[in-house]
Length: 94
Image (tube, rainbow, N blue to C red; front, top):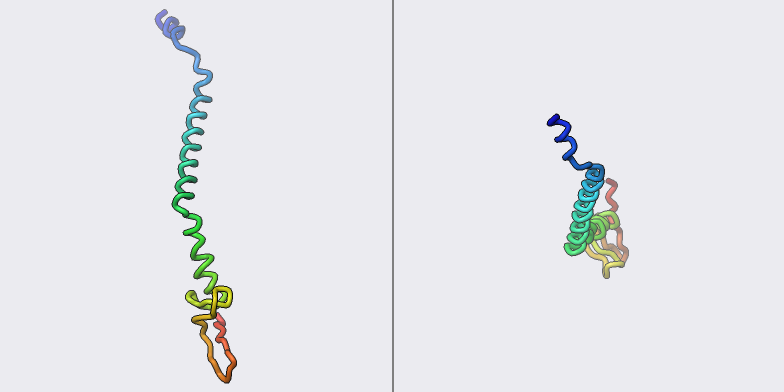
């Protein structure tokens, strides 16, 4: 008899799972928004792309990270020989 009375006192919990999923989704969205703001304020994308655009590109183009070409002003730090007004560049075969 006591068991039947106890069962009647419980409320139906049909929407509890939906509410839990909505709360979890709101937490995930909040964390995502916080990360996006932190990435934009810290300019993380520019910092990560800096070596790729700068030194790695120069190594690929000129064979030296500190080298510069006509695009960056005047050519500097190229391994070359000046002989009779002609420039001979050394090409790294590796």
